[in-house]
Image (tube, rainbow, N blue to C red; front, side):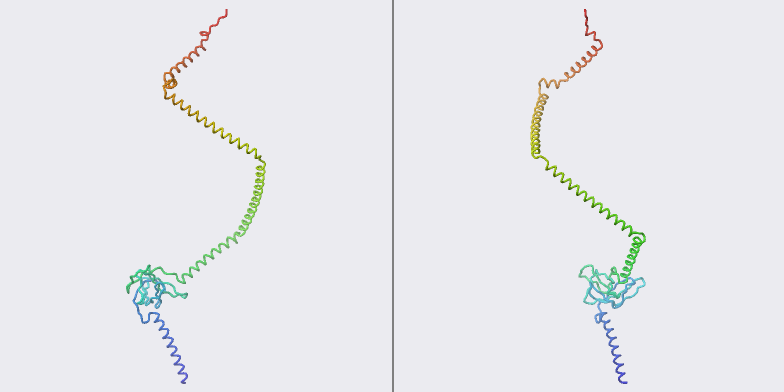
Length: 294
């Protein structure tokens, strides 16, 4: 009887020890003797926050969630307890982030930049965009999987049921035939080019080098004669320009004839009289030609 009583006491003590350990662990996680100072944030419904969840600043555990109250206006008012040894920069935002693979959540405080001014106790931090959790990631994976399945089904319909594979095989066969034809044409062109090069070499070798030298010398002499002729023409042109300039500006007979308008008038009158005389001779030849025989 006494033995059973001892066993019952030992079991009771073990249960009490386990309960004390669990409660103590939770209590230490929530700050233990260090209460810290409060900060608040408002998150939308469905954030998945509860008491005891950690609060991290740039990846470091600086506090815990002390209270999460449901507000009828569609938000959750969260009270965070920050350890006294940490200051939260005034430009920080609060974001709910997943922790681990079992759906646990935490609050991440992220400052925009390093500052020396800190958020006072009891203030409310702005809320930043949430990080997608495991459920949202799984839903996205499912959506991607359905899209991939739809694409695979469409490929199956187009390639198998609608004869796409046969068309692809026919196209590949036509392409192979075309490549063979192009290869044959390339070989023929290469052979013709080789023959053309050989004929060109024979033609070049058949040319008489002495005849080429003679032709080159004749071209050189022709070029020299052309240069001499050009020089003489240039000299003649200069002399002619000099004569014309002297005739145009001088006071000689040639200049007077060139610049005398009366000479032009007299010449025009003489030409008119000659025309009139010619017409008169044609009309009355007996007036000018009177021949008598006997």
